[in-house]
Amino acid sequence: MNMEFFINYPSDNALSRMVAEKIIEQILKGELKPGDKIVESTYAELFNISRSPVREAIYLLTTEGLIERIPRKGAFVKGYTLSEIQDLLDIRNNIELLSAKKIRDPHKKQDLLKELKLILDEMDDCCNRLQYVYLNYAYHYTLIKFSESSVLEEVYSKISLPLIRIQSIHFSLTEAVENSKNEHRKMYEFLKENRVEEFISLLRKHTEDVITNVSKILF
Image (cartoon, rainbow, N blue to C red):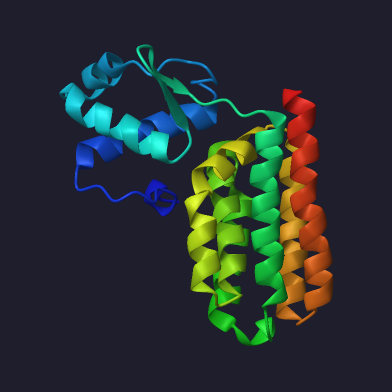
């Protein structure tokens, strides 16, 4: 899964994008934790580049909600309160449920069903937590596409990185990964069989479970 799938910002600077992707990876792996300072010289030395593209990468990730700048102190990995996590997940849940209610005849959308099936197959073979987090986002983004609403797709993509970060915490629980795989498979079957109401019911439970698990880990 290509990192560019999740990065919404336009950038003609390949160096700044490379730095941004590295910082994202470190945050999702837990190598950078909330409150950790982003040191420009670290990435300038790592990639043997000037500090200018590093600053651009930090700025771009600030706009994405992963980093916060504190005047006269520098840039730090953003931490989320339980309330902020709840708000992000509520936004996600509402977008997904709204898109689900717009779905008509999903069994006829063979291209999207095929796309879901390919993601499911990758999930079954996936042994890397970070890669599974990316696949999970791709799966849910594909569900949004069933609504045929470009507005919902665009809004959902704008919160991709904060959501991926929260999911990376969620999937640190082994049972969460297994439950996710099973429920994703069931949702796919419901769509393929045109059982939209059952799909919506499972989707609601599936998304609401995340806040419960994240709360167990962080609070």
